[in-house]
Length: 460
Image 1 (cartoon, rainbow, N blue to C red):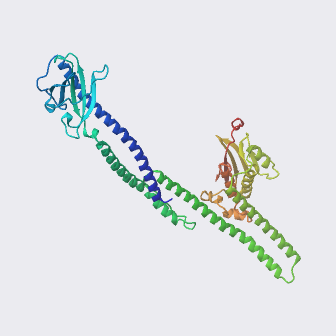
Image 2: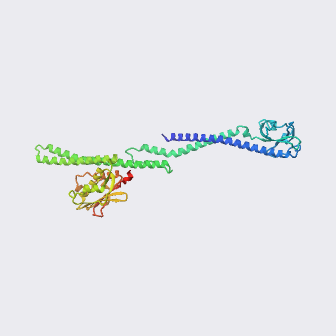
Image 3: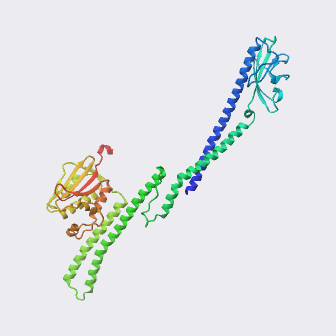
């Protein structure tokens, strides 16, 4: 999905969620504001009415009831006749502002009044609070009334209209901010998408731009670039592998074809020469077979992990495979203790065989194989007393089809895949294979490190 669609969806969803929450807040807010304003209005009128009741209980008002803001409408009404005994200036000459009487034992009145009956305009409303005062200073029971003007926003829908207008403006403003913010956040995605469109199998050196925001998009770009690095490395290695494999296979095939053509073109073939030719062809065929088998093994290692993993004792395997001095009199094994690992037996044996065979080709007179533990790691070291490996070539020997001059001289028929396959096998098992200088014998040392197998009780 394109970033613009994401931008619209995120903005729309955020606005809808914000609008729902805002509506709920506004409804609750409007109710609370109305209740609070109404309560304050009642309290003001009630306080004045109580003060009037306390006054008339012992003393009459004169012709005019003194007032103070904000309550300017007050009356003292005879309970029996309904005659206004005293009033403030705003209600002078007017009838009682309400005819409501206390109900039951309650001596208090609270009622709304609208219109000019309370001395206001046609659209004015008041909240009237009154108290019945028995045996007042006027000689009879009277009712004191105080009227407080109701704020306009309580009498009309002004409050709701203001809140709705403010909500609309806030929603629009919030939507614009979210639209801008999401667009700005997704702007790097457009650059990443544009760059991705130009990356092809023949153009894997390109990398995605990494924004300086330090957020998830930047992390995504870095992760994608790391994936591109691995992909480029894999493709480069694959191309080199195909090229080297083609070269290695072409040479023996071309030699075999040439030998056959020469032999077939001889009108009087020599039986001994033909026998030598067939022997050479057999040797070339064996080399081709070894190369093909190594290539198939490399392909299997690259497409999956080891099969039939089992617990084996490396010390026992080394002793069994190489403890027979008749096979290699110069080889000595050192296995002081059991070293248990969880690996594929056949593949690990192949690694050990490759390393020992490599040491046999380059030794002068001696090979030592050590098996030991190093913390939680199993270590196998294969030492020889040959000329060793130059430091600058200790990684090159693990490259496919890479062969040093000494190796070509001592083993002309080799494929250059033994050490690379050994490293691949060890890495598949979670270990490492490195080459170095042997401090023990002065030649080369190849070191295999593998994770030790967990104890039997942990496996259960």
